[in-house]
Amino acid sequence: MRARTAAAVLLLWTSGASADPFEQTFVVEPDVRVDVEIVSGRIELRGSSANELRVRANSALRVDGSRRRISLRAPSAGGWAPWASPTEVHVEIELPRESRIVARAINGKIEARDVTGELDLHAANGAIEVEGAPREAYLETMNAPIKFEGRRSAVVAKTLNGAIELEGVSGEVEAQTVSGKIKVEGEEIERAELRTMAGEIELATSLAKGARISARSFSGPVKLSLPEGTSARFDVQSFSGGIESEFSSRIADDESRHGFGKHGPGGRPLSFVVGDGDARISIESFSGGVKIEED
Image 1: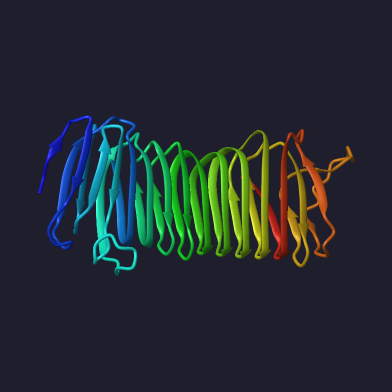
Image 2: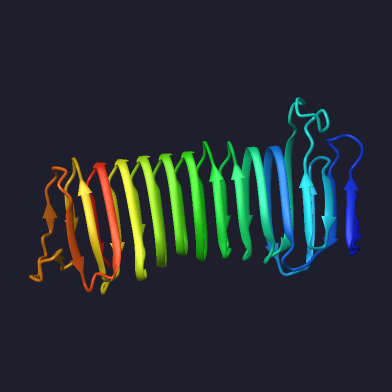
């Protein structure tokens, strides 16, 4: 089944067995809002230069909306009744790169490639993977990892049990997990909030002027890599691990220069200043050391 539609309003309901393959193409606006929802399966999103949305699926879908907004829903095996058993649905969507996308999967993976608009992705039990340059991305799952490869993107990433890996971030960044490692690589970060209960934290980035960085790990080390010439005030605390810095610094409120190198564990917070100290960096690890490297 295939159709091309340029009408202002569209409403489609596929009939027949839910196992029948589905394919449709629609003419849409470059910044079309796309809502996708499945219960179980996989959602794959691909950006393209064409002002059209092409959707393929291995089963029936409900599609409605207009050139500016399109909604796609996958029924369960027994129809749309909430008590019916879910069907494994694999949905592939090609859409304009500037699209604004909201995608939800209860049991399934979500992938997005080559999107430069906005992403809002939710997967209760499935991994989330993004590759491209979205302006901003909100990524949330519960029992799976999150991997993001972007270019100067603002990102919020949250999971309960899984690692978070963010590359190519900028501006405002947030990463939270209960059990898993957090690794972030970026540039010109203005605000970053990184939290994990059981896992290490690695942050490698340059800082915007006046940046605010906060990193907290209950059980795991924290490693921070900053470029030469960084200007920041550090407030660091490690209860059962040492504190090590490669920066030439001065203890806060003390104009004398110190390259203190290593500071032993014991729970006493340490504050020191690098450069003029315009950015503020707060690091805390209950069980694990803190290392600050100069790139």
